[in-house]
Length: 235
Image (tube, rainbow, N blue to C red; front, side, top):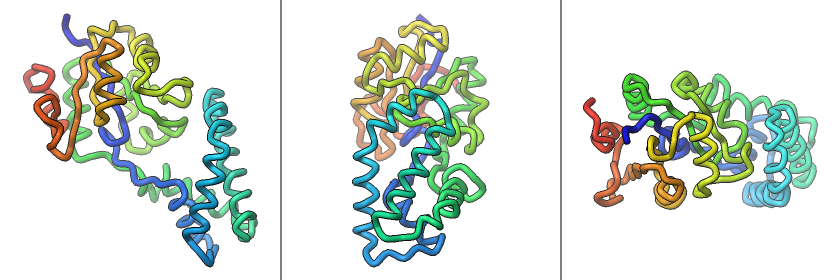
């Protein structure tokens, strides 16, 4: 059966991610004028708070309401500042710096790999239906839009909004249902051997493993430029 659709993982496949929550929080706070006697302590405190509230954050993502999720981060940051002895009066400035660096004019936490646009252009020209399918939160839509690749995708599926994540076959099935294709008609491309390769094949899709290090073996590609050949298509 011919391939009608491609699903792309995002982090590590299409998008380079530099965001480390605790480190990022400290950087944004310091830019706003905060000073921490111990950066390590400040980062540890942030990580501890985030981990303790993660299950709540997962629940909030299911609501698919950006404002609700934004409030979660604002409240987390407020409580973190108080715990480490910094003034919460800096809160709004810190949040504005963070938004700019995540999704705004200063975006420096996410970028496209140099072969991503070429692969998406090729796939669109071939007539494939495309979905972004990633273990990510509500911000996946914001990042994709900021990077200018929203137009390529017929569907964007973020795991936290669905309540299930790769390698669970249910997440793949959600993407297939929204694309309107059967598993045998779709190929998933991703960089994680378990989440992407094993997960996709377990859901009945064809899978292409991307290993940018070049050490993935005979079944992996080292660049998205190799995707047409991996799919048996002419460029």
